[in-house]
Length: 214
Image 1 (tube, rainbow, N blue to C red):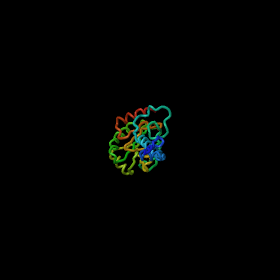
Image 2 (image 1 turned 90 degrees about the vertical axis):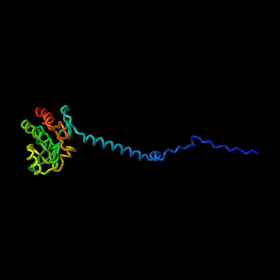
Image 3 (image 1 turned 60 degrees about the vertical axis):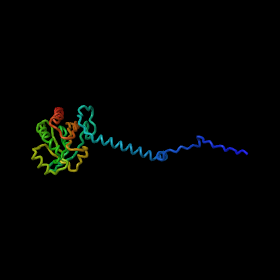
Image 4 (image 1 turned 180 degrees about the vertical axis):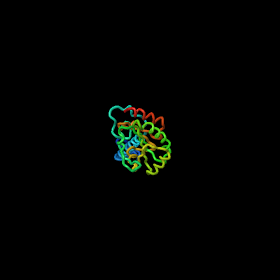
């Protein structure tokens, strides 16, 4: 008696199931997770790009910029944002009151060693060019009036010192390090931004042409 042979079932392509790795399957099933991951990545990249743009010092002159200066912003080629500060007698004074002069706006504080290093150069420039329409303004970011008076008296500083008591100017001008100096032309346009102590040669070169442009 012959034993009938049993046919072996044949697997077809339609019956074969390929199971992807669990992790990938989960992502494919949950498209919202993929979208969220991409969104977070894009946000992180955007924040990094903006942060680098804000923290990169602008040390190039804007004299090559043509046409109308850009709107107010703490960058070369833009109008200098107006700020209200206090002089050492406690009187409010605005940066816009100096329009028509070349302004060296220097952010500093007493305990800042690099600030102390550059102050003789600022003083020398002020004394040399004040009669020609230059004014140096030291914007103090940390000290009270008496501390400033004692310090500048010993050092022989005579240019105006204004106090940024609420740090509004620091925020407006995006100061991330001291000293930081802005050189502003007679029309109120920022021409140079210098992060770190400024030397006499650089300062003289920056202001000479701006003083002559009257």
